[in-house]
Image (tube, rainbow, N blue to C red):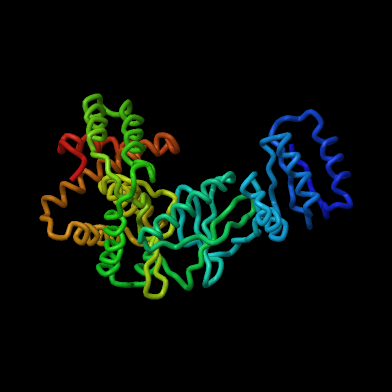
Length: 375
């Protein structure tokens, strides 16, 4: 049940307000939502009304508080006792440049100083707050990260706002002709920082556990021998507490001045770096294997450019390793990537039979070539 609070609630009208609210509630014992979007002020007498409502109904919460009302709740400790939510600033992205898009959201530049990531799920507030906490965690641990400073409402959706002064993504810089080899080197520098950052057990989700789910899902869609071996190989990948970004590609690396920063931190996890490389392979080459124009739509670069960048990334990431080692690592990453893409396509786009057939054929060819999926 939602009850709307309006105007002022103070000693002059607190008793009458409480009476009206109780009459509206009646015998209702479900979640009680107090909508404060039109509440201008609340005094201590009004706060006592809220407190009694909370005691009578433990699930009572307050939403859409303006800054002044929220500050009263915050200063008096109510935000620690119950769920109190601010009203969100409304923002339009109509006509704004789209600088990135992933499974969870789309990133817009709203002005030279600001970008906003709009989540596709209308019930995304928990995701947004989780991403902000993950970004803070990464920042404190030395990862060059852009931290969102505000949450806004965009139509029926919500978004996180980042201050990135005249920042450009690596994809944009590449499209403008910046040296691919140098961008790959800088990208790998950040990647190695991430992969050398160790967390305590349980601080972030295990990518291995998520990936085993991919293998279990696709197993019935593969020849029995291939499916059985694939699942066994996934289970044998060692657990690791080193950080993974989870969606690492050139649209999620931004250059601001002389500093490179990461965005899209909601996919942070821990695990073996082969999982990261499998996702990167998909971003640069795998997604576009059956449609070479897909990489242009996704990253804004030609597939041939993506191939050059991927090769340069491998060169710097595996610095000192011979071609045989690198080629073997790529096979392992591709197997994991194809399993992930096969699951995703079967679940989301079963009509895309060309992708399903390609992933199936690749797995049937590659799985027999290795006895482990880690290096």
